[in-house]
Image (cartoon, rainbow, N blue to C red; front, side, top):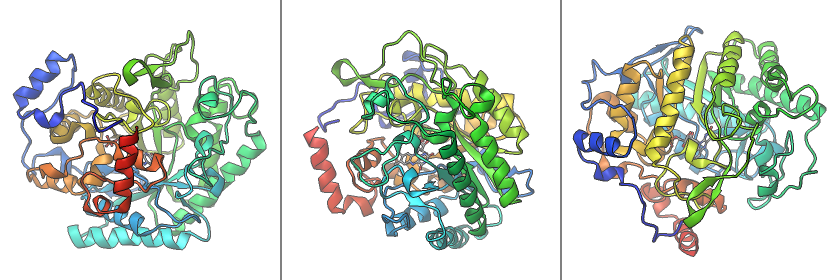
Length: 481
Ligand SMILES: Cc1cc2nc3c(=O)[nH]c(=O)nc-3n(C[C@H](O)[C@H](O)[C@H](O)COP(=O)(O)O)c2cc1C
């Protein structure tokens, strides 16, 4: 949105004391619990290790969420921008890197022309990226045996843009009443055949074999944000082997897991799951987001049939299945950045393809915390990571401490915050005061930039991006909106 936009909600930076926050939450009907004071490092849950069934230990309870930068080469290899971002993950002090960033299992499955790809030609570079993390982390924290690094494997499905930032080359599982139209497909746009899907599954297995050779501790079989894995879960009206019943809709996961067990024995797996979804949102009156109008909406996995509320019955069945397949690491997120971004990335300032917040962003934070907590309660043996905390800003540690102390998640994930303030986890663990001028203020430039074909990064706060010519371009784009 334009630079002239005046947010309707109080900025978090203006909430100075715990009592101000309590008053704000009460006045605005946000039932979000937090600890008023932070515990000293030896009592804090931030430094609590997590023991995995594999025998490996995650050294603390903070996690870096996968964050891509739209900055790879056109043949899917990392650039200096990519390396600098991965170094941030390494110096964060978080001991779990849940996937690092989305890496496509094939060229056609890329979400943008600059997404990383995993194949025989790129694996050498991906191996070096992991070693870069290990060296930096060892230099900062003295050890890496308690650092667990995953690689997120993706196929972008409906949101494939492998060759041009401006052109979707979607690979869809079913015709969607709103999303086909919104992303330029008519109702007859062809869907992937079961044989196409079998081929994509093989690409995941091949990718996992390479990831294991590169030394990654696990692969994340991504099931979130509207990408292919997630779309299977809502393919309720698809015929054939991969749609309709719950069993068919999870066959993609089951077949990939079986293939990986056979071809890459010993490799751990995790899943990033959009555990809830709602209707697609659009710009309504005064550019404020509002849901599409409909009587029935069967396509929200983890949503009621109205598409307006959450229903965790199927996500629970999914986690039950994941557990029975021997998967322990689950990272919870929700919705999709393409059709209801406020669910996954609560923000005061929307990206250029978004809408003004339809609710206090703190309600978005709370929704993810509540869903994560309910799933953790139902699956105590799973290691469950929460997302969507960056909007809390100064108050992130206080809410995170409450969540971890009360067993509402095993680990707290950092997304946008790691781009502006990479060492926030290390500061929290050491009990240091936060560096206020590094705190992410959710301006969404990290999304507006790539939506307009520019590399992603923290343009407002990271000196690397502030100085780029792209910063001027971004300013001009925002002013033109
Ligand atoms: C610039 C950017 C890149 C992202 N890249 C990925 C990605 O590659 N894979 C993924 O699962 N989520 C991705 N996400 C979502 C984040 O991992 C995270 O869920 C989201 O930002 C909410 O967490 P936060 O409040 O800490 O930012 C991305 C988000 C942003 C803003």
